Length: 329
Image (cartoon, rainbow, N blue to C red; front, side, top):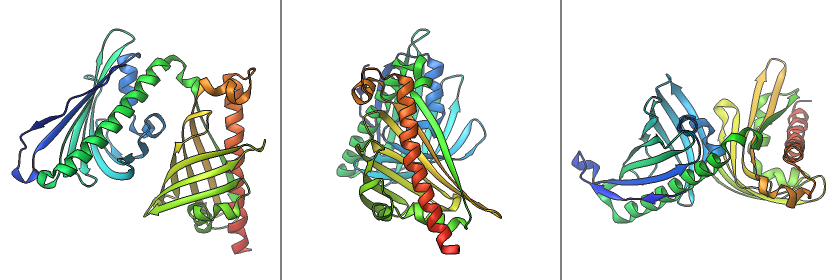
């Protein structure tokens, strides 16, 4: 894989917008151009496949134009913005423009461009044009660093996925568990949202630290597995109470998982509440035998991860159930 960066400064349009700065990142991917374009086009899948992305919410789409709400880590903090994207499958190009840019940006736009390099290889280029209020040098430098870091991470992830493209379905694992609660949705959601209480309430959580900023929670947690092993994970959670969801992305995963995203969903009706925990994982195949023993296979690793994650999340669901029902019975 080759990745290059070419910062360019160009004259801006309206004077109030300041100068427009451009970055260009390029990598070669060992996968068909159509497959690479498919990864770029499906933005809701980015949190699992792209390291910096925490959550992507599709607000509207007509198949060509779409509006997205996006959360991602950038420059050591979690940023949130909304974007408009235009998808051109024939040209394998996705243009984007941030509608409500995250500070310190005044404007951000760009494009993903996929070019075939034979039947099983493609070149992917990521373009960014941005400006900051007053063209302040320190803000320009911060955006350039954050853009460069995230772009390199995203392109590197795509290149790694390309190397394993034919086997990606075997490495990705998605599943969910649900519990019915004879109580309203509000206390169930409240239990899941108040993550700072989990160390006291959940036996499988031995340590938890959380930093909250509005709907965003950044947490470090030690959890125990059935065999007594302890795993340290770091996660970013986004609480979306209007839809009864809490979405999260693990930014530090156990050895068997290259990536892990999830969602808690709380849905109330006339009969009570259904609360669901959904997980999506990319397995880290090279660590399987080191963690599970020389006889372990990809199939046994899938079973192990499914049982370990499902056991802990179901335990959390059942504690939420008991808590909510204790308030109403």
